Image (cartoon, rainbow, N blue to C red; front, side):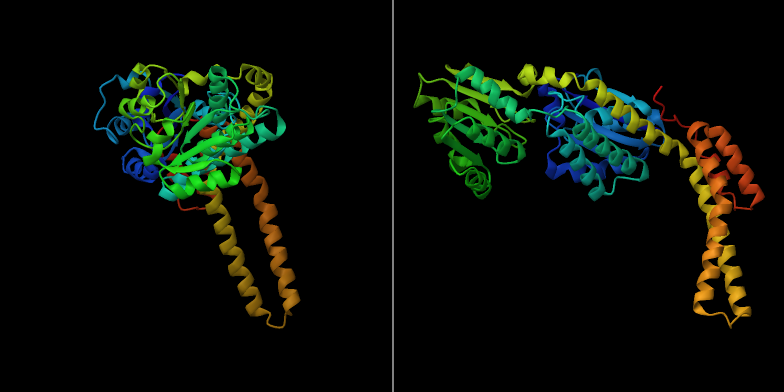
Length: 442
């Protein structure tokens, strides 16, 4: 079965298209269950961040499966789209899909190279797919290896040094536009991970007049209490907060605009000559782009943060060759495992048959020799286990090695073993699988 990645990202797709397909965490389980119901989709996981929406899947058939994934993206949330989705989508197959996920998890494919949040987001995608039971052995192993690659990149290189994230980039661009945040009033909308990071960075910049607004007032209050300063608001208080704010940073999971021109215009009436700078790092966006028609209001969205903090990013670029070596190492390890699966049925059957024979003969021996002590029985049992293990070790190792390099030869060898040991056609079942595209890094 071919592995594929189908997606939209900041590199191929503007934010106004990405936001149409962003899946809030609350609906991820529902989406994965819906994906699982497509006939050609055997396994699936989804990665949805401010910079990308990607589906990783193992398919029964490449062409049919990819069309079903595209149909899912077109119809699951919106019942069709008015733009040419095909022009934005990319599809990676086999080894390219594997390598792409590892580049994502290590931060090489991020909007800000080495961003701090992406590894946690990949882990969350893995956990969500586990909960939805949309993972099988292939994607379970793939995501575990991707997480290992991401951790290795951060522990063995400086790709994540000088913590730079979308949230911190938002504060940097705000400083470029309004100057120091000390003495300014900053409104942070959203108390999730991004909002909390933004609030923390605002406080570190010397801002004393911090307002944190959230749908749940208690969550906003928790952020303020952790920082030791600021004011917590529920979302209905946003307009009043706009009357005071110099800077707004917003990052929520809302599926609609939280700030529309009417709200912002009402807030600006109380301070018409004082500029308001808004940074919207949410996908879908929290702020209606039409607010820029209001005098003294400026707005940037997540796609406009790409050129922020270039000094830090340039330092990280020096680490790219080292991280690419890690990506290659982990991708090749996964490919070897994936290709060796052809050996699993015959190996399992061979080991099971040997164990059945061993247990039967040991039981007969013990029945004939009741005078054996418990220690003697343990020694005989241990010796029998060692004999079976040593006898099968070379066969199993050679078959797995052959499977990782030459699937056809491995199938032939598995067929011979199946015939010689009368393994009930386990190898023939493996050989009867439909022709698929093997994951190759070439």
